[in-house]
Length: 80
Image (cartoon, rainbow, N blue to C red; front, top):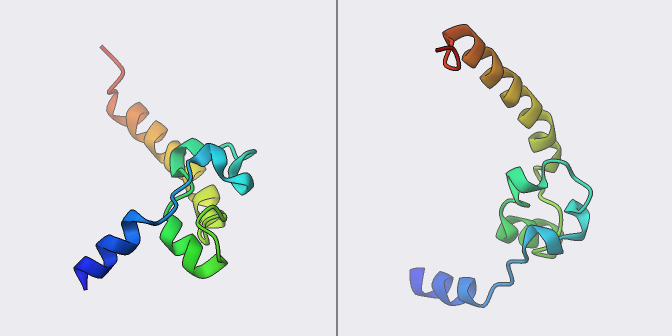
């Protein structure tokens, strides 16, 4: 089974985030980088399609940044 996956993966088209039309205007594109092209291909028919979890990433990333900022402020990591 691994040999079959290896053959399929090497011939699989994995477009860069700049080539994914649905990601062009997204402010988070360089964070998620379009995620798994295999999942997008299987569920949406194209490796360059938007991730099925796109809405989740867009909701989670701002919250993660907020939590990290709060952690840095609380523990004074930036203070000298």
